[in-house]
Image (cartoon, rainbow, N blue to C red):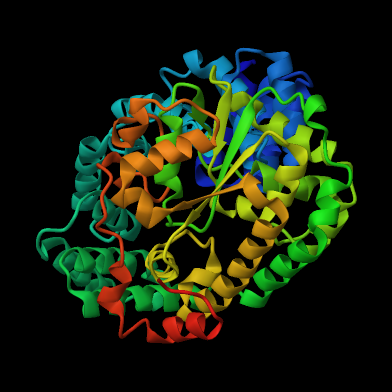
Length: 527
């Protein structure tokens, strides 16, 4: 570019930092008016389109940049970020991998590339990028926060604690960092609790702005066995989240009813893929249930086997069903989507899921997908993959419900923020479980969480055998499994198997009476 266009480019870059998109767009037009093949003109235009979520045109502009100048890592990483946001995970990961070596002096794009890897379920690849970005520009809190989050997923708890403590010393009002720090250790005194309460008094925000802090305080109070006060903060958190959730539990109940009605035994038999024709590159194991019921522990046990890897929690089955339905909706899944896809050739779902997941396959012949809510799609799974193993984790209903109630899921599982919602949803969920028991029969491998932690060796041997695998001693030491765990249980799974969480709900028996009565009234056994 000549001197004039360099000046225009500099003005455009400055406007990007200020998020003055009108000026960025004007600079892009000016550059391309003087040089229609300028990569910089297309790059700035792509940033404008991306900022306004005009993703198709943003992709076109950014792809043009790489076509004109294959060395433009900034365009490549921006494009990869577009892909990961659209859940085109394999393409996004491949693009970052291709340009990763060119990022060593760009803290901004090291961080963006790390975020792409994190979004596609590869925090192990994100960690060194966040680390390098933080070293190049140590004063940027966002880089440090991302590094700490990635570190937790990788079991680097000491490093994450040091980072979070430093961040909070600079910005003590950062509520999410308080919650992240609270999750790392069992509280031994009230020091951090008092700090967080002081922040609440100083900031004096409305309850909906304090959700993360309420959960953090509740967690540490529970550590100290201050049961009544802990519950008060869990309730404050749930009530605050509910106030902005825009949610009606009937939406989830209608979806469950539709699945039960459509994905029945006759449907399962009709058009199922013949096992001889099932040419899936890997044999899947699906672990399902409710969140916080032991699905992560079970995943770690199974994936400690030499013939099994874990892809963590993916939403690829849901995404495949949604995409193939052709129905656009603000809801992630609707009864109409189930109705539409149930009429399709199941091979479309079978191939679509495996194609989305292929970038995560390692050398092991089997893999675990442990998204609890794949229980909604067990009909599709069983029909598409005759060789798939399906493992359901059962936990005492009261422990299961309370474990969800006191956990912030970043606006997922919205039914869990009130005891009323939990009660209604659990009754419907139990109806769905019984439906799958009737439809799937022996294909549904059931594991009792309480039995697993109380009699670890025998229950582990039984589980591994039910998967058609020979027993391996490593499966008895899931805490030594060094693989990634990007779930709400990422800290706990680094511990030895224990029984401390069994019957924990009884510490809150008085507060949980309405939930208990609702479940018992629906005929659900609480033993």
